[in-house]
Amino acid sequence: MNEQRLIRAKSGANQEGTGAHNRRVIIDALRVNGALSRADLARATGLTKQAVSNLVETLENEGLVASEDLVRKGRGQPSTPYRLVAGGAYSIGLQIDRHISRAIVVDLVGNILARATAKVPPRAPEEGVKVLLDLLADVRTEFAAGRPDAEARIAGIGVAMPGPFGVEIADDSLWLMQAWQSFPLVARLAAGTGLAVSLQNDAAACATAERMVGAANGLDHAVCIYVGYGIGAGLILGGELYSGANGNAGEIGMVLFGGPDHLVPLEHRASIASLYALVGIDPADPEQFDKLETLVSAGDRRVADWIDRAGHDLRLAVHTAETLFDPQTVILSSGVPGSLMPALIAAIEPLRPSLVPTAGRTVPRVRLGMTNPWAVAIGAAADPIRRAFDPSFSAILKRQGE
Image (cartoon, rainbow, N blue to C red; front, side, top):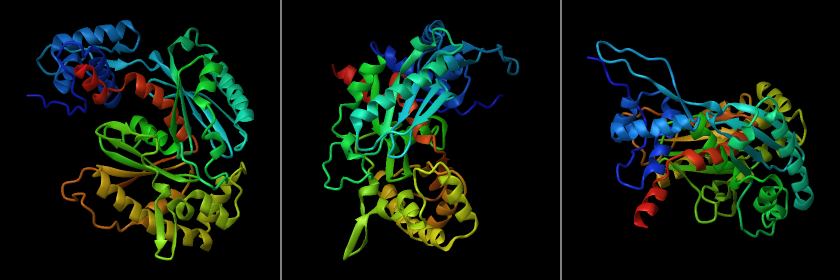
């Protein structure tokens, strides 16, 4: 008797009017698990075999799913695995940051097809949006070369930038890019590109990237703490990205730390901006990562002291995240490559006791995620794909209630 393969999948619904949800369930199962047969899909999603066959046929006709060679297992009938077609859909990601902005094009399974960078004035959105539109035009031209009709399969543009959103703070430093907060960015980009545009903070975008192609892939409950120029957390709760009422859920960098007489936000103590200020690195310097890696490798005392302090504060942040959200894991991600983040993960240990069970765990309480300058842009690009193709239980409940 053959052992059945363990498959991660959301549940489908066999009631009337749930076809759109079930379509997303099939796509999500193929994305998380790779190629699956119709029988595998029916068993994992709880849908009838006939429903799965109809959905797979529709997705195949739409160019989103393709069959692979027959597979024979034991004495049973051979089965046909189905996989996602990478070129079935595309998406553009745009990361707007204080010192450099990045645009990227990915396909349905996360392959990077084109990318470009530009400097955007952090305090001049009217001027900056023109730079962004030129940047998007450049990356679309590069992507479209040799791909006839690919433009018609672009799901949209995902934009990520520092938060919090809609909050008036007296501090007009580059830290918050506050001049952009009241600017009609989404409308201007949509009008200038002819594509649907969505906006989220950079930590949420990084969490989306981790769920699609990183350390949170296949997990339904994870907190992704993004250690960048600032600090934020992306929340994956119940298999869906949670953004809160104003898109500011997970702004853990604004939580106050320190002694009773001197409280400062976490990101003032443990962000990359605080480290760069300590060691005199210009965040706009193209050589910034190489310069930082040289200091880390040399055991620079200033960097070592920062790692100790940041590790202490992030240990408390992990404890807070575990206590509030009961995740399967807390992921630390960053836009800084090299050995800094592994050293910071080591400094967080030993973790403080929390309400999260430790016995029988298959995933560590804390794990290292992406350490890639393009991580936020990848997550931004994943957002339109998530919106178009990921199952959303809140959406299906709303439809059933209507």
